Structure formats: C-alpha cells, structure tokens
Length: 401
Image (cartoon, rainbow, N blue to C red):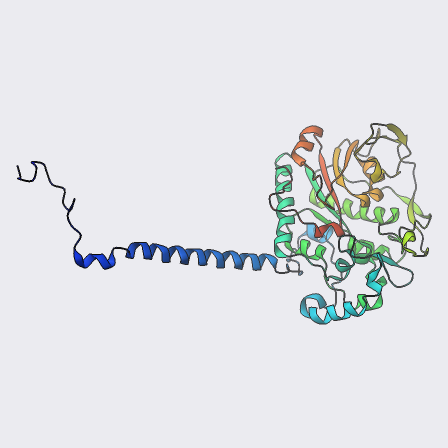
C-alpha cells in the first residue's frame, strides 16, 4: 500500500502537464479545423462542378442505335446545317435582337402566311430555332422520369408508348421567317432523343415531313397538327408498335380513299393574323368506323360517330367501343395534340381513359401507379406536345413509382 492513499494509481491521472507540451496542446483542434475547412472546400468545389455540368447544354447528337426498333420508331430526320446557338451564340443573339420589333407580338409571322406562337407560350419560338435548349440536368430529369415509368409498367406486362407530337416548326422549318430559318439548330426534342435510346419514344417528324410534300399535316394558322397529320402519325405508331411489341395485338391502320379538306381554324386570328391556306386536311376513310360511347368529365354520356375526336375540353373522359380493333384497354395521358389521334384510339382499344397530363405547368401531374391500379390498362400511352419539353420534372417529382 502506498503512502498516497492505498489504491492502485492510474498512470498519468492527476499528473501535471509537462511544460514542454503546453505549446502543442491545441494542435489537434487546429488540425481538425483545417481538415474541416478542406473538406468543406472540396465539397463546395465538387458541388459547384456538378452544378456547372448539370447546367451545361445537353448533347444534341443522338447515340448510335442502328437496331430495327430505332430505325422504325425514330426514322432519321435531316439535321440542321450547323448549330448557331451552340457554336456562335453571341452572333446569333445579335441577329435575334435585330428583329426585336418582329418578336414583340404574341405571334411571329413566318413565310407564305405561316405564323408561330412567340415565347410567351413555353418559349415556343426560341425552341423552334434552338435558342432555348435543355440543360444536362433537365434532360436527365425527363429521362429518369420516363425510365422509372417504363420499368414499372414492364414489370406488370403493360405496354408503354411515349409519343412526342412535334411542333409545326419541326415539320415545316422552311416556313419560319427567313432570318430565323438561317438561325435554326437542333431542338429540345433532339436532345431528349439523344439521351434516351432506351425509351419507347416515337419520333413522328420524318414521316410528317414526307407527307407534308403532298397534303397539309399542319396549317399555316394553327399550332396543332391536322387530322391528316394525326393519321400519318398513326401509321408511324403502328410500324413502331409492331417491332417494339411483336407479340401484341397489332395497331390497325384503317384504309382511306383520300383526303378531305375542311375549314381554316385560325388559332391566331385574335392576334391579327389573316386566314391562310392550305386548309385543314383529314382522312376520308374507306369504311365506316364503329360508333363510340364517350363519357366526359361531367359524367355525361353520349354516342359519337366513329373517328370523331375527343376534344381536350371533355377530359377526363373515357370511351367504350363495341367491335374495336382489339380487346385491349388503354390509359392515355395527353394534351390538345391528342385530338387528332383520339378518334383512332377509340377504334383501336375497346376502352380508353384519357386524362390531361398537365406537363405544361405540372399543376396536377399524374400518379401513374394510382391510375394503373384503378383502371388496369393493357397499354399506357403518353402523348406529349414537343413544346412542353422545356418544363422538365422538378427534383423529387416522379411518375408515382
């Protein structure tokens, strides 16, 4: 037992700190502070680098996909001669500013009586020439959104088709104002396609451009494709579906005797744009199509003649068709561009549910999981106007899966 108290002594306990140690006793804290600062700087730099990369313009050149599905679903379109908004943006912006007077109205006048919405509608005119492109993060947001949807539906054995309905300027670029046509480069649709070889996207532009040489698939004074444009697009969808889902019920293309011409339907009249031809073209079907029972958003039920459009104003709506071309049921998320396809959807599918997707402002985005659990469709179609692509899904917004 020791004189100090009779217990075991813990080495160092209560021992005085050596005088030589005092200058170093705060070193661990200083080192920790320095390391924390370095970690913070590295984290800030890394995040800044990621943010810069995400804010860069996404590529416009498509990934090589020479398989049959890509060739049929995305037939090649003639690319622009160059990329003025990527390679010489300052010069292009200068030309844009030179035409500020023409760009001051809600509608921009093109050649041969054509007109196009200006930028107050989803930066429409800037999209038309490629001035408004998507960032890498925006393209990734769209791709991830649809990839999740595609995977979830495939796991349930449900077909998916993503149908990007092009703007008039993507089909008739030569009708843009002459100065704007010279500035035209790739568009957000090109960017999405470049990043999404794995998604079931239908690109209608090639076939519409071919058809436009003979009949009106758009008209000079309306932003929507004509019923004939919808019929041309339906044929593209049928060919794409045949190679994407070879074991499924085929998409039927009803024969036609030709084209019938309707009215002008001037969407820009309130902006002082005069009527212009060609007028609205529509298919003249060789055989009578089956009547369709339509239940609109007010729960009112009516019977319409086969081939008649279900207008966007009636949504949410459902259709039932006895003697449809298949027994399948389709859930369709759409916008006003779906009018020209809606009559054919009602003939192809025994039952459809048509809902506005609200990708224009994301005010009420669809929950696909809930809709699928409610309706049990065999097919899901997402019909999306090209100009909505600037409204990429926000962080955390998904399809419900």
